[in-house]
Image (cartoon, rainbow, N blue to C red; front, side, top):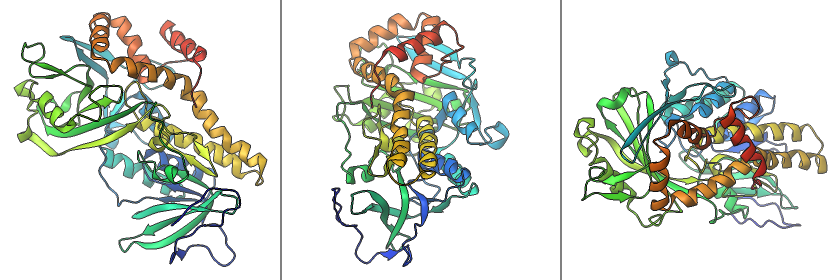
Length: 448
């Protein structure tokens, strides 16, 4: 298929495609959403709940494996609660109490803060279960979900506006086309649909890579998310040990396994030139034997994924298409958390689209759709700009070591840092640390 975005361009279509629209060219749905991850399914739920017809297209067959997202901070808990998901332990969720930070020979436990805006606990659940739950939640609200439907490109009208998508559907990969008034691209880190519209990743903004593996371990019942700010090849502090780039995590799944992984930012000298899978093994081989984090206790292979951060793909609205979640680069550059921001971006997109579709085609509708990137910038633009600066600093090992050695011995300072890194604060009725974060947000120019 060939796509050209230009005024006066002809409608594009795939040769031999099964046309999903009739002779009267009615739309298949009000909204097409590409990708049934947390961003796409959340948007589908909110739009279907608002009475809009939604077509959710997913290239894989569920349940399917994803690398990140098993552990959620209170921000993720809040997003799930807003969707109406039962997050009780009786419903199969594991609750976590807070964060354990390890660096500079110190170990600091910090419970999640008591806030008005967020619940005081995080969650653990396998990502395959989470994604299936969210997609089925959207279907229960009225969305139509087509699995094994791989979107291959946009369909454009004569003005170069996206009016649908072409796809390969089912195990036989038959060509099909779907039409809608608005298309939401939630197709993940690759941003394939955005790239086909000429929207590419900004290499100057943060990007990370993460690898993780499951292990059978006696630490499976640990109810803290553990963050390692220093990764050592060998016992920490030993003369023969080497400090590795990046940060690591360990947390219990509650089912006999732990999730262990590491992440590296593109501000690190080792980014793109490191065997991350080998690095994970080297780090874990230096952890205590009784944790049993060795290859013989591994459950499944080491898997890796990119972490598109800090709005590293913009604009978030162009030619009738909105970018959501990883496709929009919404991962938090401070801590690499992506699931809550994906779900929130789905909600913001749904709000803008619902308002737009209640207006006539033309400038009024465009103003409503333009509210989506404006809302993303308002919510996270200043915070992500600071996160970009933070990422550049911690990419320098000397700065990272200096920061951890001087901050970790001060619990009050670290609680402030935790709030900042996890984006957990009450902007209007919180304590002094909340007000400081809110002030910093207000005086920092937002990125778009």
